Image (cartoon, rainbow, N blue to C red; front, side):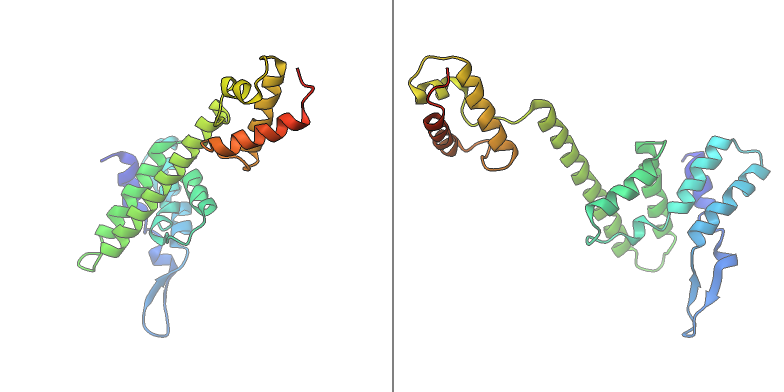
Length: 207
């Protein structure tokens, strides 16, 4: 129920007439009607005095309206991210939501044909995006917090049976590097202890 969505819904198939072809088996096809429709939309909307921002937003949706329906689980993460970037370009979350709303409305227009498969595809795309956003959030959090060590400085001192000193920081830095390169899990206390024991053998003179 917004001007952007309403204009996009009105114009999304506007180029089906100029792109219509009939295949040898008698089926109708409208190749690139989404791209050509996006080229036609500004002239139509300008003629009735719509604002440039609204024209740009509706034009984007017309150009993207076939993409979500074409999704399948074999798409790579990079392909999903490209679609996210295109939909959210300059509009953020609203761009994505408008694109999905238009795709759902487009599918509803297929009635009385079955639309369950198409709606399932959109649900899967939404879930894939949610997973990617969650992975990004966790990655950002890990980057902010840095690697978490399985054992702390106090336990390192106990293992070494030595007085605390700068060597403890060096030992922790060693473990951090092992975590970063994937040789030590952040919860693997046993492996951490073994690594520190070996490190201590080669750094006996550290203070």
